[in-house]
Length: 453
Image (tube, rainbow, N blue to C red):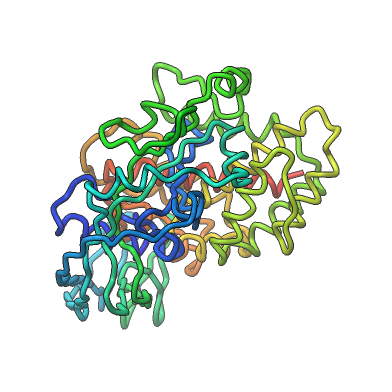
């Protein structure tokens, strides 16, 4: 399931009615995107999730010769967002028989905020394109050129005109006396609200971008251009014959795609990433413990990914620096490239999880329930992997048995954030949840293996 921020951004983009608008996924990106911002489209390390847009925090104007920034066209409008919260106030469960509960529906307080659509007029682009690139070339462009990475320019944004407070009612928490049935021989009853939705709020500052459009940026021998009709990756950003030839031998991001992508392929993919890396126990501990510390800091996770993708990779402070130091010890190891790719694979998967899932995942690591959660996710994902319609399912009691009350609440939260409709008795598979469940499975699988000798 999208994060609280992304859910609001998707609703707003739908309200605007432009299908080419791209909703922003998190608040960190919302503060980096502006008209003329440069976006890097990152190719995934997995076959099971798509490419991600990564804002660079750099404007096109910063790489061109100095000149005034042209005015953009601004169209104001107001957006109202209302969530409905369902709250269970009584529960009675008889494992192996029936479960009954009474329920009331509470409408959460709606929020409305002012926005405007900021567009770069087409008629000013020819004048901008007369400007030359700065010399010498910016160092980050050299790195992207060497790695043959495509870049894009933001041409339209939907921005907040005032500070907004977003509300989310999807978090699960247990209250009062409750005993959840964990196998066919247990009976449990909950009183006073056994399971209910917890509320979270997020303050989004004025000027944040909730959605945007982008066009591909290309550099040619005779200058540069913005492509307005090409599809994603139809052309390369750096159109230099010699560079393209030199990059053909690089297989860092080349992926072989089998004809059928089923759950078995996903399992083999993540298993192979772990097995081939052959991390020592010391490095396993370093990666696991420092990722756990970083789960509350999306920017630190992104910095570590960016640094790891450099050739050679640079330096960082904090937990990310500790992981880099551990990997540097194995520079002469023939499996060094595989170790590095495993960490990148894991980081990419983690970055695709929501902020709520990051918090729940950190708790799961602390409580040592990753293996149980991995098996539970597999029990849902494997039989439904190719299911393209909503369908009810029940969780296997034997897989729930090892999870205590708080463990179960954390696990339900992780699953619900993937887009599944989670209930105590009967849950619902949603086709759009497959990618996020695949990401969660890969994350849990890899993290659990890091704890094993």
